[in-house]
Length: 194
Image 1 (cartoon, rainbow, N blue to C red):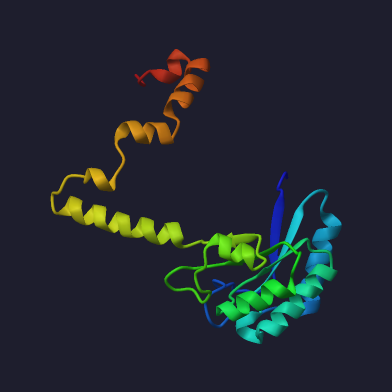
Image 2: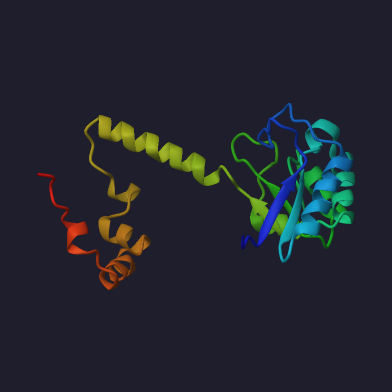
């Protein structure tokens, strides 16, 4: 299908956010089988094997699982939920030279915030910050709705103008495409039923 990478995880269903308590993981052997199946089926795809084992089984078991997934053919390891800098460093050392991923859920997750360069220096190649933009967007939306409710105009320091917005969405380029492929007159102005 053209995907360049996929990650497979070892959490049981129903799946929970990797930073939530109460997760369980499938047996290591079952995940190894999943990785082997993905390796056998791929043509040219990077396989990232994710483990959520830190919370239910501890960091040592998560590292053991990661090594088993590499042995099964995974190209990289995604260790979810290191709970402090010590665990971040242990995981980084355990997978030195291996493409390594984790995630940081700011303002609510279990992994402490470090910048991308700090993670890179500790051995991580892929860092996900899945709530960083989302939480800021929600706060902005709440503020904008409150201002609108109070009859306040948009604050220029807190917004973009129309020209900037059009540049961001590349409106001119899309207009050129529309002009190259015009819609027929009947589609533009459909006839009303009689």
